[in-house]
Each structure stands twice: as C-alpha cells, then as structure tokens.
Amino acid sequence: MSTTRGWTLGETVRAAPRWARIYLPSSGLDGLVEALWLFTLGWEASRAGSASGLVLAAGAVPSIAFVLWGGSLADRLGAHRVAVWTMLARVLILGAWAAILVTDAAPAYLAAAVAFATGSVAGIHDPAVSALPRLLVPAAALETTTNAQRICIRLVQTAGPSLGGLIAGWFGVGTVGVVAAAVGLLPLAGYAALRRTPAPQIDQPSSADLHHGGGAGSSGSLWAGFQWIRKDPVVRRTLPVQGVVNLTTASILMAALPSQARAYGWGAETYGLAAGAFGAGMLLGSLAAFGIRSRAPRRKLAVAVSCAALASVMVAVTGSAVSAPLAIAAAGLMGLMIGPVGSVLTGWTMAASARSDPTTYGRVYAVLLLVTVAGEPLGFVIFSGLASITSTATTAIIFGSAGLIVAMFALAARAVWVGQAG
Image 1 (tube, rainbow, N blue to C red):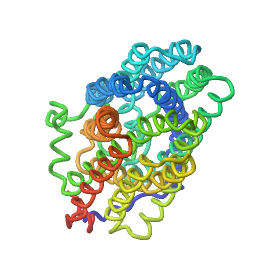
Image 2: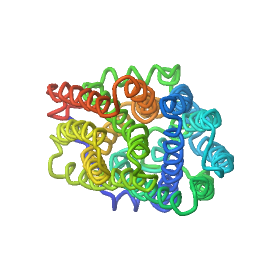
Image 3: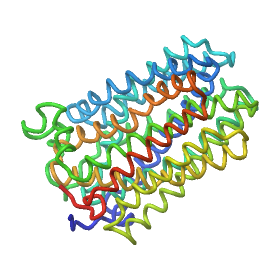
C-alpha cells in the first residue's frame, strides 16, 4: 500500500501558482466550450431519429483513433504546443458549426462532418491538456490537482447545458454555437501563456524526459501505457468501471435525454436543465471526493466503485423517465453518484503512474482517455441501435445493468478495498 502523502490544495497553489491562475480557469473554460458543443450536437443529432447514432458515431471513431496519437504527440512535441494548436482548430470548427446551425435545422450529413472534425481534434487535444499539470505541479500534488480540475469542470458542466438550453430557447441553437466559439478564444490565450512555463524543479525526472518520453523502454511504443495498466492490481480493475459507467451515463445524456425531450415535447430547455442537473450532481460528488480521500483514505477506491454501482441504477431510472421533473431529478442523482468515481479513480491512476514511471505518463493517460472519455461516444451508437430495436427505456435498463455488473466485479477484488498499489 502506498504511503506517499498527497499535497493539499493550498500547498499546490503555493508551489505552482501558474497552474492555479492560468491552467485551471483555462481548462474550465475549455470544458464549457465542450459542454456547449455537446449540447448542440445532442440536440441536432436527435432530429435525425434512428440515424442519430450514426451522427454521434462520426465523432466517436476519430476521437478514439487519435487519442493514443495525441498522447504520443504530447510526449514528443510538448503538451503546451499541442494544446495551443488543437484549441485553435477547435475554435475554427465551432465557428463553422455556428454558421451551419443558424437555420436551426442542420442536415445530418453536415452534423456528421462537423462531429468527425471535432472528434479528430479532441482526440489530440484532450491528452495534451490532461498532461499539462504534470509539467506544472509536483508529482505528489497530481491527485489534488485532478480533484480541483474536476470540480472546475463540474461547474461548467452544470452551467453549460443549462446555459445552452436557455440560449437556444431565447435566440436559437445557432447562437449557442457562436457563444461556444467566442468562449474558446479564452482557453486558447491561456494555453498560449503556459508555453514557456518550466517544469517544477522539485520533481524527478527532468522536464525534457517528460516532454520527450525519457528512456527507450517507455518511449518505444504506446503499448507501454497498456502494459503499465495491465500490471497494476488496482487500475486494471477500476479502469473498466470508469469506462463502462462513463459510456452508459454519456449515452443517457447525449442519446436518451434529447430523444425523450423531443418525444414527450419537453423542448431544448428541459434537455438543458436535465443535463445541467447532472453537472450539478457531479459537482457535489466531486466535492464529496475530497472528504472521501481524507476520511477514508484506505477505502476511497471501494467507496468510488460503490458510487459507480449506484450511478448505474440511476442510468436505468433516468433513461426510462416519462416526465420532465423525474428525468431532471434522476439525472441529478446520477451525476451525484458518478462525481466521486472520476475524481478518486482517475486521481489514483495519475498519481500511481507518475510515481511508478513518469516517462510513460502521457501514454498512460492517453489510454485512460481511450477507455473513458474517448470511449463514451461508442455508447451513443450502441444505445441508438438497441433503442431502435427495443425502446429507449429498455436500452437504459440494459445499460444500467451492465454498469452494475462491472462495478460489483471490481468490488470483489481485495486490492480495491485495501488500496494496494502496484
């Protein structure tokens, strides 16, 4: 069991002020841009009916294909540089998307094309942005920075969909795209300001190793990330939990809720409120993660996996809701339960990877994104396909059951209960 003491948030801010002043707000605004984009994509894709899964799939394939390459680029070219150029590309794509949305009736093929372009950029962008803290803060502070960043992201995930729904209701969905592109200029400036930030001097190994991958053993191929995860007794059990639960909850948010809102006449505002309630729940859950870490340090992994099991139950409830109030409330509870999952489990993975072999950090985190964030869109395709054969409610119950089974399997492992590091 690891005895390395994690840093407090105050210690981290004092040791890495540019992380707190520039990176944290920039990544938060980056998350707001993504939240607004996903709101518009989900709403427009639901217009395609049974073909909505194909529209969402257009963004899934490139995001998965490029995420591993993105981790490698972050290691070889520098995370700062990759983050800047991909953020610029994201802003330009969103500007084009806003022009398409002006009619509030984007053709399915154009929505699919924009989803493909955005997914390609996201696959490269996300590993670079996620690797930046490793260049800004000491390794012992990575778990704390992960929690802080997730809370920041939860704030914008709460405000983003609700804001998108209100803007769409008042001014049309095209205005949401304009706002997203304009907001994207702020994180672009923030990432550019971090390009000359030196790595913390109290860390080992050197910043050059972190940028370029270090020794030959870790930089030879991206397979090193998979190999490290396979050998860790905790991560190899908790990573599937993150992947399945993230996939199922994302499917509810992007595929089920928009379809329910259209089918029952709830409108874009209700869809935005339900997605915002999910974000608010995740915010509270992420805040609770700080208490879990301090009050139950040895049981934090088991608590997080248990929350994943409860979140899976709420997946079924949310996806089968027939009234707007029930859908909003269930989405909020689903977010509350999943909040500690990402904060605790991702924080553990990041810290364990940095302590074990920092030179593979970018690759390990790229694999983490592949299984979790980049893997989420696959659920859209599966969900839409099953829903077209059965129903939205039945598919939601199937997805919730799958998440519950995976979580219970992880809870059966002793390493998850004792927090045994590899």
